Image (cartoon, rainbow, N blue to C red; front, side, top):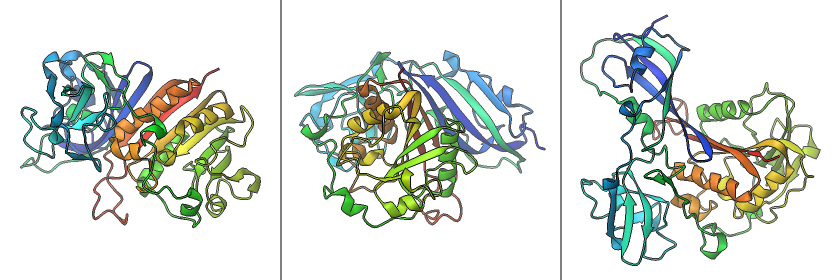
Length: 419
């Protein structure tokens, strides 16, 4: 079996572990063709990997000198408010009205006029809005993880001999792991936690949708299809299985033909969804007609179950369609036993006409922050955490493989019902 040295390349999964003020976070990145001679690794991680084979896991608490730069006051800038207005972002045109530009939210630097050293409208590095008035907007350009204490873990998936080192790209794997989102689920500035403004429901249309026709019409025709690629579905099953023990009573909210759980996991599942045919096609619910509940949560958020009926609640690939998520999550808390966990997962694929407007405006990592905020607002949950997984190669036989290089990313937010 090949071992890591300067004459090998490998496939690794890097994981960033960090804490925000009231939550734990793990952000995982699949890294293919890691070059152990040329690439940069933080601190002593490369030395720890020397001689490792497939299955080896190395963990390093990053000292400040090997981590991201600390937050700097010089990177907090004030610009005219019009620097953000008139620009199209996430399908909306930003205006001077307060509902469009919100404190605690991120906007890509390339969409902001007047920022120094930004030369490309495609620059997606995030700028955090700290505050705004009629004339000015204050922006924090520090990295979303600046000032956080980070632990980095590397799991060796495979090692293979390499054949020469002509050309190619050198990767800095700490920079790669921290890029494109980690930290945005828990924004803070210069060590101060911010409460992002996610809107206030119906009063500003944050939870309105393009298609406001009754959901029963949209879901009347069964969709017996997968909503993620096969590798992402397997990854989601692994995430859920790591948090659910055999014998648990599980409620699958907004269920369809798949509860995204491994076949070998012996648990009791009740499915609540919009289409009877989809529920009947779910092997977890087969021959359990009494555990197949057709119910429209947007029409009636109250769940038809007694208090403390379940050990876990799943809300998989569908939270973006809830027009009153606060009420639904409060109901999920009611039907959970004390200590029972709610697991809310999603990817970046959804039906755009039925997703609420706010969801379409947020970066994927900000969507995690939204879910955490909604869980907090119930007052019923503790032990908040998130996990993400990005960068795995898309299966070669996937119908979208010709246009999408990577497997669908996975995002999970979880919490435990307070005693």
